[in-house]
Image 1 (tube, one colour):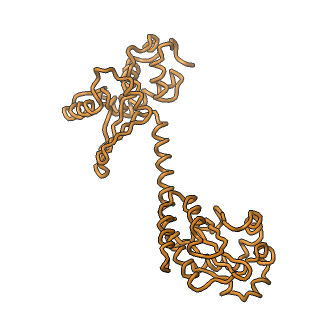
Image 2 (cartoon, rainbow, N blue to C red):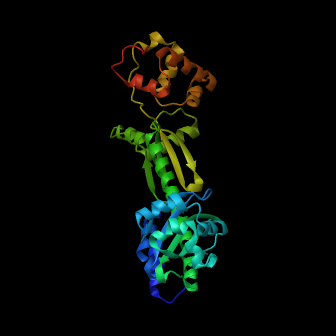
Image 3 (spheres, rainbow, N blue to C red):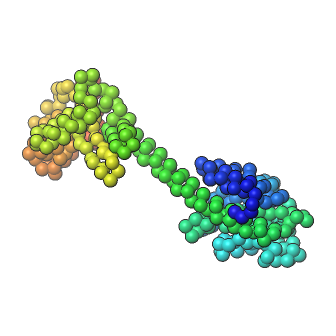
Length: 339
């Protein structure tokens, strides 16, 4: 923003500290007086495609004015429409004489509530699309805006565009992070993510439960990973804590998938009476945490055949998933298969 006043630079610095769009708006209202004298100010967030209002707020006008404007004048406001269509700062007294402005329906029905003679809309553009407008107005004898103020409105809207772009990206990433984190927490698969770059490790709820159940003498997670890799290289079968590891070299990270509820000391006595010997064998391997591909290797069967055995097991036991199967085998109180 132009001008010699250090207050403008401090205002710009204060805006840059905003942590959210709402915070940016409040900082805008708190510091706007160092740029413009005696103005009412509004900041409207718009849908970038349709330009429909997403959020509105203002300082210096009544709630009734805002409601009335949205109901009667927003779609018909020629100054706002020009600002959005041209992506340029629009000034009502550059488009109309004061007499013509006062004679317009939007003035008589809405803007007259605060005697707004001078009105400026500065579009806030992000990635070539108008995502917000900075709205400035004055009433009575001080209604006119000087050319220097129009330049300040343009510069301020450009600054708001840069800040808003960063905040919108930040809010989107934070939302995605929460979504992915909540999804990871809710999944039943035990997952441990090791971030080598930041030297941090994250285990979801299922993994924490698995690790908490490990006896004191059990190998540490990193030891189990090494053992799993060595057994895999040698071709030996392995059914320890770590089921598999997925490397993510571009992110300097890796993901370890742990074997879940593997503490089944003995299958129910009724199981061999309900299933065939081969089906029982498949169940024994499922409850140790092996996947279909690992079971197929262990039993020298095709993955398709293993899946077929599991479908038949589910049908006979009246269940629908691997999780239900493991739970049934773990529950010591179950003595008969479900109907």
